[in-house]
Amino acid sequence: AADVVVVEFESAEIGDHVESWQEKGVTFALAHQPTKSKAKGRVMFFPHIASGHKGILNAMADESIPVSVTFPSIVNMVELKLWGSTTRAAVVEAFDAEGKLVDQASLDHVPVRKRPEEPVPIFQMKVQGEGIASIQISGSQPGGFLAADELRFHPQPTASELTSSDDSEAAP
Image (cartoon, rainbow, N blue to C red; front, side, top):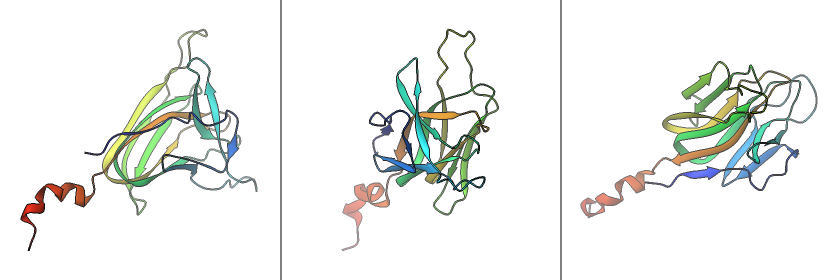
C-alpha cells in the first residue's frame, strides 16, 4: 500500500498572501474568485501561537470562500488538523474528478478554549471514499477563520499496484 503523505506548510511565511500554494504535489487555492470585489483570490498563512504551527486559510476577509485542495493523484482518505475562531463551523467536503461529492465531515462549532490562557484547540476531521481528487475546507463566516494546520492523505493504489501480484497469471 502507498505511504501516507503529510503536508505541514513548514516552508511557508506567516502572513504571505498567495494565489495558490503547492507542496508535495498538492495545490491549495480558493475554490473560486471573489464575487464582492475585483481583488484576486488569495490564501494566506496564519500562526497557531501555542504550537508554532502554520495554517493555511482564506485571505479574503469580507467573503467566505472555501479553500480548495487538489491532489496530484486520486486518494481514498484525507485527515486534517484544523483550528478556527470561536463560534465557527467547520466543513470538509471530498469530491471525485467529475466534481461529485464523495464524502463530507462537519462540525457545527469548532472546539474552543475553556479559559483565556489555554491555547486555541487543534481538532481533527477526516473524509474518505473511492476516487477523491480534491477537497474543500469551509465553514468560517467573514471576519472569522478556519485554518488547516496539517493535511495527511492516502494515495489510492493504482490498478497496476493492485494487480502486480497477479503477473504470473497474465496472458502469454
